[in-house]
Figure (cartoon, rainbow, N blue to C red):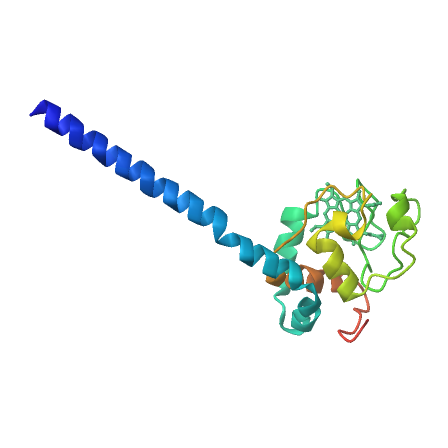
Length: 162
Ligand code: HEC
């Protein structure tokens, strides 16, 4: 009897291992199209800014950005530059901050589409960037975060900017 129990036990453990394996494999395979889709989504994010959840954007900022960036008027540069008035601001131009050559020479401004592209995957937008952040892949979180960044101003940029 003991032997049979031991055998069914082992069979059970084997079955559990196999189904766990299947779940892991499925998890590895199925999110891939979603990630690829997210990558293709940036252009749509600015369109969602008007209905974005600014409170969630602030939460995202606190969780993912605050370690390196201040968000107040006149706040100091830290590992990254201060982000007050970032929407509409010239790229790589915050006084007293040493940017990567790539960011410094972009020469444009941070409109909604530029922020969206950069925050999706900073190293794709500025290959030599010094911003050690892998990117925020979820479009709704990015829209919420960018809507929050827009609020860091006495005179928030119109959503029609760009
Ligand atoms: C680990 C530190 C770190 C984290 C986390 C981080 N950043 Fe940065 N950020 C930097 C650095 C460093 C730079 C300057 C990059 C360069 O010079 O290439 C930068 C640059 C930027 C710029 C360009 C600013 C300008 O003046 O042109 C923006 C916008 C920005 N970060 C937004 C964010 C947001 C939003 C988050 C959160 C999702 C974030 N960063 C998370 C370090 C960080």
